Length: 243
Ligand SMILES: Nc1ncnc2c1ncn2[C@@H]1O[C@H](COP(=O)(O)OP(=O)(O)OP(=O)(O)O)[C@@H](O)[C@H]1O
View 1 (cartoon, rainbow, N blue to C red):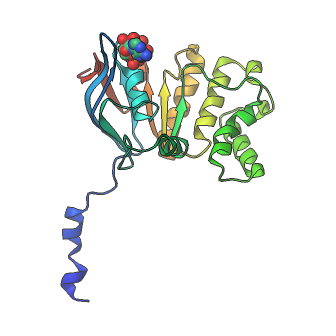
View 2 (view 1 turned 135 degrees about the vertical axis):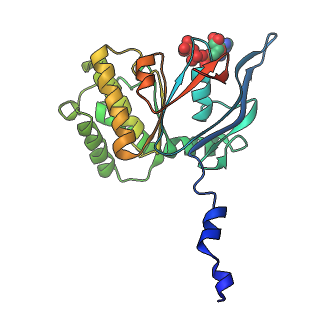
View 3 (view 1 turned 45 degrees about the vertical axis):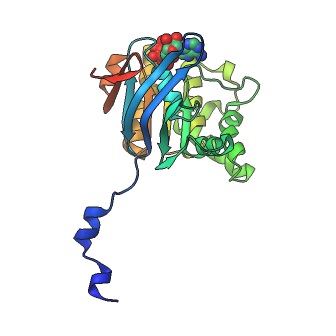
């Protein structure tokens, strides 16, 4: 092989674009059809890298949840696109989009949406069962380990209604982490919690970013909390604006 074919390393470095952003939006627009169409988000361009802790802020009704749902492939844009790890997603089948959600994105909502008739451990195992990559015993061990890491080791066999709001939200975080996704998307994760539980959940999200290099994107009304995240995306009338 000639020297030329091996290539000068500096030339390769200059042309190598590096890894694709974890989540990217290009001209993302979502309009609800109707006699008076409602524009939820308009023309949003953004790019989120692995390891970022991003707040989505803005007044009530500005489109924060709508943007999060589009970025999380829970909704489809009217125009524009979302790319996950460089892969355009808007033309994929719902089955493929669901597979990306299951392995790449973990969700935490304001209300935990745990199944009331299941134990805490069984709730955390649900995404693992759907993905179906681990034998049952390993799923259970992993769920228990996650719950223990989040301070819930004494509550593994309880049902959600036997826990406090803050504990339930930590179970929801464990469930979001079940399949080891690189990104967690959270919609007002502390919105229904008292200040002490809010702080605990915030510290957990912070540690996911700092210690485990997860990407966390969280919609929040809490401007103090948003100020403690690494980056803020501020929405006004469905568009990105200066905070
Ligand atoms: N399915 C729907 N039908 C009609 N209007 C909707 C629908 N979903 C959202 N909207 C409206 O679109 C706008 C954006 O909603 P969205 O929930 O994304 O805002 P938000 O910033 O998250 O609000 P909040 O802070 O109050 O949760 C709001 O005016 C909302 O009322």
